Length: 441
Image (cartoon, rainbow, N blue to C red):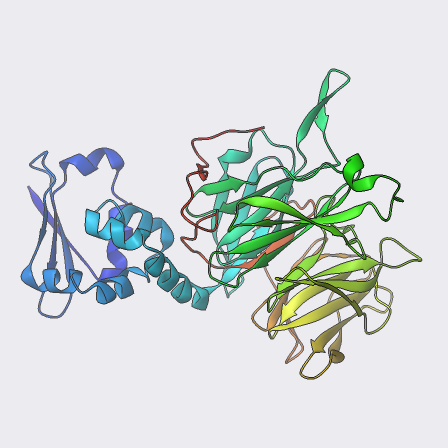
């Protein structure tokens, strides 16, 4: 019996993906390209032998690497992982850094939101498209032996996740709240990299992630309260506050010394500190002298590991967030009593100057607090206690999203997200782990 199915090039990955794995050995795939460029997938179940055949026309296309790469770069990453098994040529092409870069550039044109609504030991992520609809949910089986995890940033398909490590105290296994485990994860390729532990700290550390200057390079800034005598002898608690940097290029931490300020911890997440990466620089809030829960200024670090401070445009509230809007550092401040939101943009053509982008009334009551805010392109995604909104500051338009699948929230976060094949280690690295095959504490 011979069955013939017809599909175009972009659909073929979906057809192959639907095939049961137990049937693959009994199928014969013949790719044909007819006169109008339509791809045909013929499946023959009469033999146990797998045969890959091409016509002369498909052979010509397949052997023009840039044409084949252009076609495959539009295929979803999950299907690309299947396509790597088609032949050695395809595997070599899809695994090359040049193709990974091309795929990323194409994928960046179709970014979505990735939402992590409930901080737990088992990570469940949701992808939300431009229409505000959930298109996919992703589970992380890797995390079943870890303490509660949170996501602190997303960039080019990679997520940075942190959690408290376990320790034994008085014969009991408890969370070590003076340290964090840091993982770089690619949720689509199902790979993750556990970073080496940083320097011992006497209090909970804060981190921030900078990406670049090249694709698939990053640095992680970790602020800690020095515990070792060599770093902390004869120093006050404030002077013991140090910073170290992990580089994906070296795969190790380097202590850069004492820092002028320590990023404030966010009341919206027991683990993370609100920070944002914009144009080669990371920004964190610094707590005000009057209230440790309210920002008083901003700490900035660039990729060259130099630090500066920036004043805020005016007094802000506990419900304030640093975001990347229109390619500029921006401040979103929600004033619950007045039920308004102010959005400021830091313009830095000649010298840094805050400009009020807009001030608008919020579509929810003041007893419903904003738990997270993030931007994608020129819009802002708000997560409140009971709702999800997308706000267009250019036109003052609020869109309430119907995310009924997200029934519970616990320290929710969301980020702009694009699928990619990027390596978690910043390069092809043998330390990378298959999430489904490894477990860790």
